[in-house]
Image 1 (cartoon, rainbow, N blue to C red):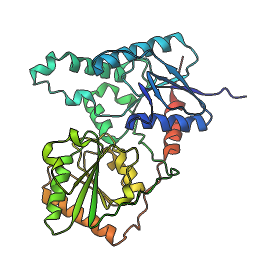
Image 2: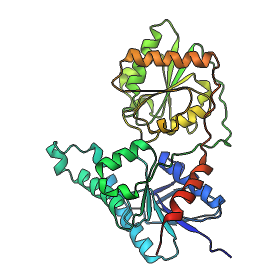
Image 3: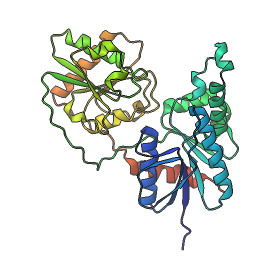
Image 4: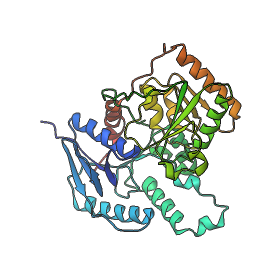
Length: 354
């Protein structure tokens, strides 16, 4: 009888509480369904999965995020060092006790400008950079999995010494079996949507400029904003009558909209793109979004340096395609079972554990 395969994932918050956390949640569920023994090492837990064992570390009370992460990784190291039954150690955080790590965001070192003297003196920045180096360059780490080619390029540029263990990306999936409740909202004219709590980085101001210019065509266009609460936005945004501030919602009713606008400054992947396309909504986004890898239909990706007129013209083209019902092209299915299978075949099968 074959020995059961064991994998242990490291994530501070286990549950559907964010993009990275959703990736871990669905991957663990997929691996468990494929017969793996799945453990989770976390600090906080929101929800349970059948067949997934949770090992919680003490909750630390540090004030800053870098101190919290530093304390968490030390607790993880002690736990892993004390156990010999955890199998493959798969981290999604700044760990020092893993065989493989999935890199979900922009490398912190990329945001560090060495010419700015205060960066060299910042304890916070130095701590994040050191933890990132330890995560990627530690001897125990045999494989690095980025979530997009955009992230892979950044890592290879900043850390050329890890190129041998830097693999091709394994993108986040979507749940094609999930049932989305369609909320009926009466909307006249065209309805665009923007999604993102981190609204500055994800380009809300540019999205507003695009819709403002579209409205100059004598088209009644609205822009619904999901993610940030109204009070977190500038006062001038709160006064725009065609800007509909919806706040945070667990599920965005994409089918109610004609176009997703996502001009992000940097997005390691961008789950909103996959979710919108799954619901048949065209997407206008920047070329700094990792989801561009999947070559989805009815998507336009533009440089952030393109003029607002160019962005508007692409928006008009996408809206014209939608109104003409030109959905002949079908996107390739990339669901969470594909993600679990990819880790099993392309990553875990090549690792050695002690």
